[in-house]
Image (cartoon, rainbow, N blue to C red; front, side):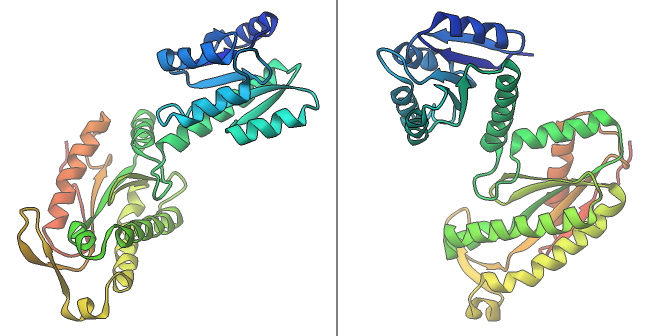
Length: 309
């Protein structure tokens, strides 16, 4: 397993040595003596986290951080600033520049390691989370599915998405479409967490695609409640005229004008009880097949894979 990379920046070689000794067992350490050199290294090495002194020659910590945060491809990298005891102005300057955390010199190695782990964990979750719903994204979904497979305990996975969502977006616009996506997330969170058992998980693949994991014996009831709740909410997504007619007029993927029904939700259930699951891709493949079948009913529905291996 590759070690995460940490860039340490300080003009004091003794501090760099201490940081090297503290971090080397757990991380790959890259070092620089000032902000200018550090900026060049960031572009070359792309560290996972940066520890930076505030007072340095050539380019101080505040200016370094400001330059880093201006770059859209680098601004996600978290920065821990090293400051002297009581240097309030340094901290204020760092906050304005976008610093993520502070350590006062002299620092405790154990505290520094604890803060690094906390920030890396928080950054990983933040980068993976869906920006619309803040639910875990694809990386977390894959990791969680693999975790269930490795445990060998029975589980069930629901793959859910909306029917006729593209037509809805075309008619009502992306802002209204985003509100529908957020409402789907609320419905899933409510019923999966309330009824799905103690080891539940909800992830947002992207767009109108979601994944949830819960106990096999409860997932059918969870799906029933999700569908009932979502169908009750659909009236709030449309104008009175569209609800009365029961359809909207929009263009299909070929650009032809067509009538589309109201939004519905389709769910495919993949169960480790029905068949032996050995890898994550297997879950995705079966889930996609089931979801496609569920959509053929042209109403909110869920289907379970009953094939046995």
